[in-house]
Image 1 (tube, rainbow, N blue to C red):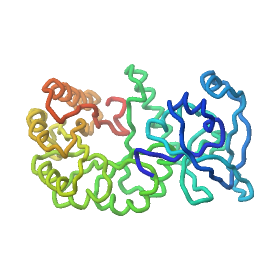
Image 2 (spheres, helix red, strand yellow):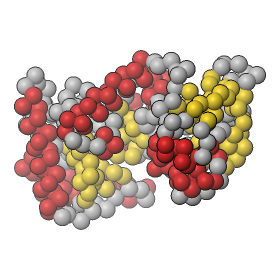
Image 3 (spheres, helix red, strand yellow):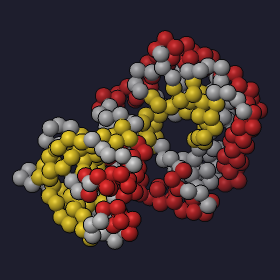
Image 4 (cartoon, helix red, strand yellow):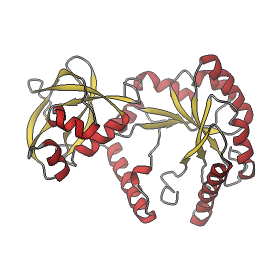
Length: 330
């Protein structure tokens, strides 16, 4: 499984042509498959949009029994990132999505009963963070779907990372190349997107490009950009990058100064292997919320300056900022 394609097991209404057209705008191609240790129950649907699409008041719902004699038959379809999000919208709150292994050995997402779920510590933590994000968005009049939760997985073992991914949080980030390397084999078959958020040394460039990194959040010097570009040309690759800005102006932090940002981005934009997608900053560690807010405000102002400069090969769609202690301010 890759980050931009997923396998989805349907045992119910998503197998219907009408529902597929309504949900995805196309018919899916699939293969028959069997899942053990589950049984089917029925759920009464009250969501008007789902009722309209399916034409059925009662939908099947999978319940995990742990009994190998229980099984569900259905179809595995291949879908895109966007289509997976559309599926999440179609499946009402009584369902949640997990990754399971099927009789053939294939892995695919399946929607199962929310009622029988036993949340882990990881899942509980994610639920709390998402709730905080939703509340902050409501206060700031932002759409929560615009916000991406990036899980920093430094020192976290792959089993716990898998729990988060299987709960639907597929954006993970490491800040050491060695940890990316150690976890790569264990996680490579689980659909996720790996980012790098640490300070990248130039002698680690060749190493990190082996591990399917989607985005580097910490581009902070021209020599790094140049050496990344040279290696990417050799490998016939491109990579997404964010420019790190030292908005707190602390000597202990990496990043371009705010005053250098626009010129630095103009210089880096000449390297067509580096796809500049936005900016990153780490807010000052302080109990003074105004100081923290000042860092994030400065990053937003730089984003606007870069947009107005209309630099070729540059997008400013992403602002990577805010951690668990200051996400509401971000």
